[in-house]
Amino acid sequence: MSSFKISTFLIVVLAVIPVLYGQDIALNENNMDEVMATGTMEPPMSSATHSHPTTAPKHPTPTPTLSKGNYTLKDRDGKICFRAIFETTFKVMYHAKGSSKKIASFDLPPNHAYRGVCSSKMIHFWITWKPAYVLNMTFIEKAVNGTIQPNSEIDEMKENQAWELENIKFTYDTHDNKNFPNAMKPAKSIVYSNATAVFFRTPVNESYTCVSKSVIPMYDMGGMKVMANVTISKAKIQPFAQKYGAEFTCASDLAKNNVVPIAVGAALAGLLLIVIVAYFIGRRNARAGYESV
Image (cartoon, rainbow, N blue to C red):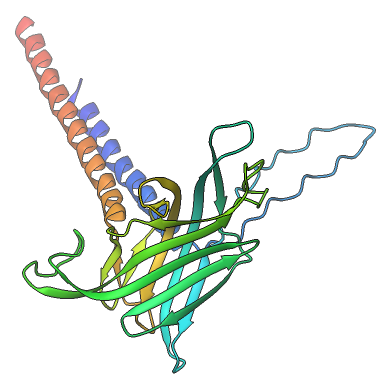
């Protein structure tokens, strides 16, 4: 292999890799910044009879998007005390007729309502929708010791103020045949998050930001058996403030953001190693040719 060919190969590789890397980053940024609207499926096109049938062009069916809730609460003085944007999905285990167990999967519908009550150190926030669903969340502000998350620069030896999602309670009713078809002994049920778990802990005056899915197990009243999962994604949450503060990125997003640079760096290192090896092999073959002459 001549040195000219090797140099050309190296230039092409180094030119292509940044382009691919840039496209990947752009896609991630678009996904983070997109505003999700209520998704609808386009109705099927009506079929008509033609004397000369032709093949209609195929259009991709749009993927329905989740309803992203945009929430704002005000205190007694009319000042904003809570802001949040997030998507929510649910998985609930139930017993169906003729089957041992089934999993009901459904999303937070767009036609839901919400309410809340703010105090200086606690916010009660709940979302309701028909026929009998209620999602309760309680946010608190408290003093904590040590770092709050891996991306925090807070001194581990100091006591720091933070806010967190203290608990979640979810009420559902298996009488809803749409989400719980053929439910055995339909009834209203309530599930709870782990009483000792910590969710979304964030430095005070900063907004929790997380595109990744946060799956929260929900237990029965005894706290022994997982009965459901509440999944929150594409979230930006800011309690105890009138406006969103500096973004506090969740650990899952940080881990994903680090994968691409590491992978690209490893690929470049491998390609450079191949080029170097090929270069020395080419030189050795050329030298052997000269000696034979």
